[in-house]
Image (cartoon, rainbow, N blue to C red):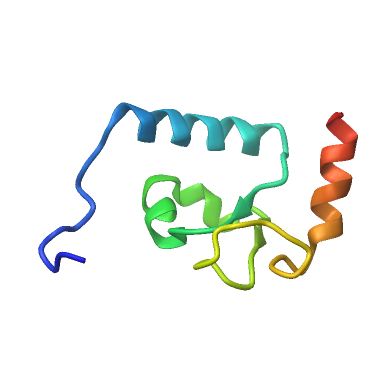
Length: 82
């Protein structure tokens, strides 16, 4: 990683992701934080006060029974919208 880069890059996909997160929060959706929590909180500070699910190992980057303590809660949330 570069020591000079401070995450100042803003691309359309980032704006879209922020928009989607904010809309999810408005509808009380389950949000799973997998990676880049600090960076995400910089662009969506209100997420700090929102109940989120976290993974045991952010480096793995996947959601599974072994990596997410509340995996069943995720399965239940998916079942509600299916």
